[in-house]
Length: 170
Length: 170
DNA sequence: CCGATAATGTTATACAATCACATAGAGGGT
DNA sequence: ACCCTCTATGTGATTGTATAACATTATCGG
Image 1: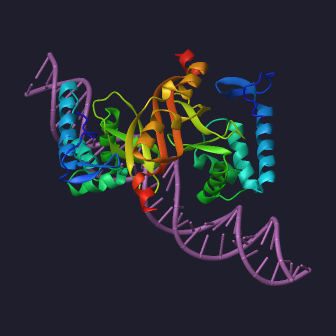
Image 2: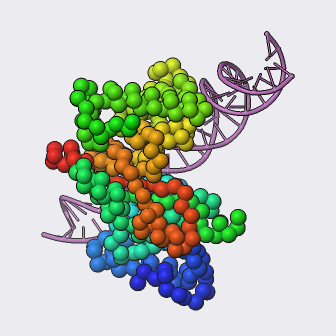
Image 3: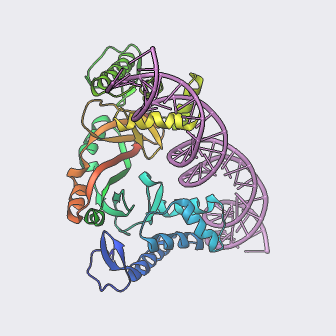
């Protein structure tokens, strides 16, 4: 289901996980998955929300709220910040989209369905963002939290560095 | 040297690491340590920079850039954003202060001197911020990075949840 | 069909960060 | 002491990010 690792014929290729993949089918799958989950859980994937998710899945990179807003305006939706932020809130709350705190920007979830605490690798040269899995509560941080009685609800894990593509170029 | 764990008589108590401690001596130690390191490394801990560090050590919690700027203004320093941001840049670059990406705010480093990749626990009720150590490159994230050829330079690790104090109150 | 609730739209504003340019201090070499 | 250079500070203006407050519209259950 979360298909970013399977080998596929590269027709319309783009970069995900620093690897080429069939982007067109990947977009369709992501939207279909989201729609189904919303149906199943009684969530309302309204036009604005769907459009924002579609944009993020299409782009496959982090977009700022105002870049998103610009495109919503072009598509005839409301043009004020709350329009974008509310859609993003919904998508983030329900795990369809993640916020990259380091960039104040948003990316579509690359592992929909998985119960995950995501981690990200962010290239400081080309701004590519790749999602990985993490389990920070299992390591030193989790131990520290238990030691002092802090209850972890959510974690932000973001690694900044250089992606393989930019390493090659240099 | 980094003394937040030693048992001390509680005279002027405050919260750090969710534990009471001798805050007055803790502030003095932190500033003295910073001054010494700057002398040793030829860094210039100018009045603005020192004041900002002092504020953050005093407060023992995350402050936004504009809160810092307000207090700089009161103390007779420049009143425009760059004044605060430049001081913060210096302090962050040299490890005296950390930025909390989740809050777009800044805290004094709690482990001065230690070569560290810090991790933070942030209480979503009272906004307390506690610094712990992490080694994210050793875990799942590090493995993922090596697998795809991503070179990690820096990591952001922030856990959001409820601190022991707020748990008790509820 | 009605009422409650959720979602959208809009105005205004707060908070975060950077650019560009002028001025002032600190340090090194002669 | 002087000048030169580099660093740091001060200021005005602007851009980007995010939320508050309130009116309007759509959706769903009864």
